[in-house]
Image 1 (cartoon, rainbow, N blue to C red):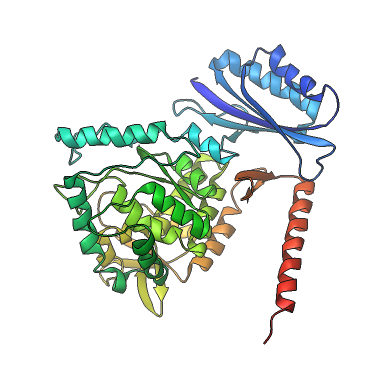
Image 2 (image 1 turned 90 degrees about the vertical axis):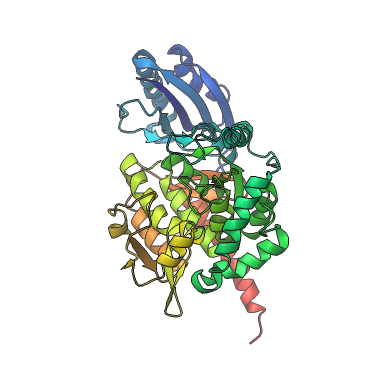
Length: 436
């Protein structure tokens, strides 16, 4: 067994020595805690507090002591008041305790915990990568990787001075793609594009800076960007979307073949993804997939990742009877942008049950696309499909605290209903003041 990062969430009645009693099981079983925090429960702030403790478990012996500590904590706090969130290393076995839920971030700054855990590329390139033998390109990739590895939530994203070769590659891709947007891109994309040109320095001669773009997307929909060195796991990448955070690369593809890249790059991110993260409906749809992934079993992460692939990456929708692209993989690729709306490619209705069983190529043109009638309809179907995920709670994103709340008790539901009632009252007041 390798190392295991674990968070334990529990609630206690606010009374003298209650926290000391709750932490005693960890002390007695020689479990070292790396982080402790508390906050009053929103539904009963005077009487109850919620606590979050983080720890790491190494080896089978410590795992047994941890399980004993959790059992003692449940005796102290109550069975339903304790939630274990487990994040195991890739080489470890399936959790021995079936009540454990895969670890997921509760607060937005916890994205820092996995942002550097990339699966491939980064500063090191595979032998078949177009830039593998180019020492200058490899050294540039290391610069970009170092920026991502050192970045922490809340910091401004460091500016990058792109060299002439990188600017030339960007200009080649930018100039060709923009000739196809008017006919092949969805209306939401076409609406935002001129705003990016006006506000974020989108043009063929300049690669926009991530920090500047991130501030613009935040103003539009609350979505922000954070730098990443390479590909994250599906679980980690989707978790970022739950917080309206998009992990974006800053490096650019190799100039030898500007119309091909074996990995996401700044052309893909800024041209393909960013415009629709500025659209409220699409932003909500993207976050919906992210929230569905939190705490989901591995087999469901694979399903959600496939849904992501055929929507946010290679999505196609109907617009006034015509096919239009909304997926970033289509909008940032000449071949895909032409192929996805042509009669030569296969089109199927947007049905999540069929999508999640569909295999897809990563380095070649997509042979099939799933057509959604609208973002709202796709979001509705994804939400219905996600309700089947076997997890003992529902999650709700609180934009005020930028944190995820677990809805697993009646009191949580009552609070949400009260909040909704307050919003409805505001809406009712606004409607009453409207004139026909």
